[in-house]
Image (cartoon, rainbow, N blue to C red; front, side, top):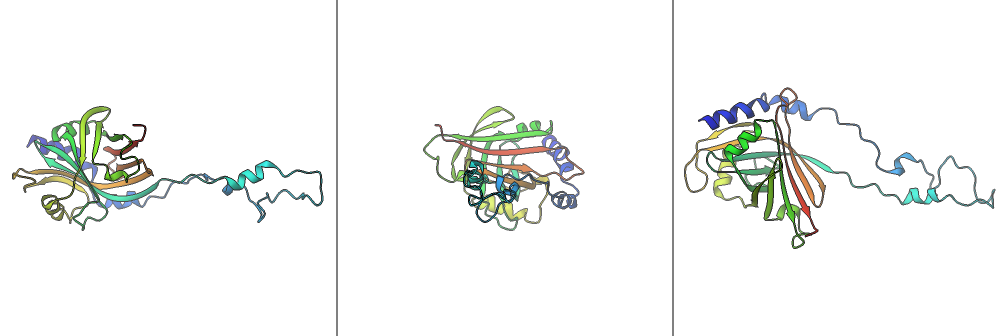
Length: 245
């Protein structure tokens, strides 16, 4: 019971009241600067700046400036895509933690399910300090071009400490049954008095909205979204791939 009380003490204030989540997600978006030179230099249909009134017909000795051609060739780098997902961290009190990601809480098949090597009491201890950063890394060339979330094994570290290997799993009947039990819950933490796996031990869980950021084909991350009134917990999970081998 001490672990359950600790989990509720450090997690429940981060999520209630639930209406605050909608307020936080509806905040005014940040103003972004233009990442393309084409947004800052107004051009004509011929690709030349509009403030350049000279033409080769009137000034035969003039040479077309090189920067004009370069401006039309610059392509803005792709911006990271961001979406809202539902993330659930769960596990037995004396077992390992799992991380489950869903686009829709009514669908019991998650699009990402990971078994983490960190134990429940270890994660609770880390969350007492208010900052948890979990990095899942893959170094190799064998799976360098497959979809990032399809990599089966990841080297995991939590707040800079290596803990072992995380594994991607398929959602079986126990996981889907648990997710069906939590369909009415979007944000919250507590205990499910039902079995998961081969025994009937209670399941501790923390469920919240996460910001899913796709930085590139080799990097994705999930960031816990706290209500503005309760910004006490920071939790991020990173998926990183290096093709250097």
